Length: 94
View 1 (cartoon, rainbow, N blue to C red):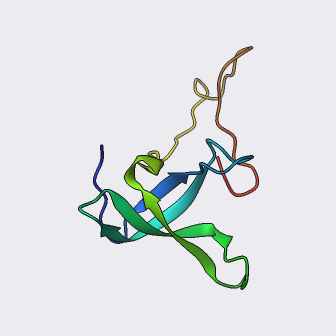
View 2: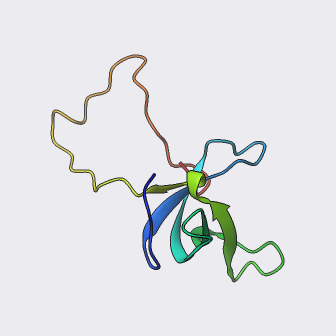
């Protein structure tokens, strides 16, 4: 399992019903409990009570993954085939 440090950009997997398996962009505010938990601040999700403030949560290490490397498009990578799997960005999550 990867270790993350303060300031690292990550993606956090939701375990909430209706959002299960969706990933949301965030940054690590602090590692906790010997890197088994992380305090994260989401890039696009906001607090329910004050929608001007980014949502901050404590999440388990198994819900956090590194952001993917930047994508470079070439003619060869722009081809999709029938039944190809793909991630899609929708409603602020992957």
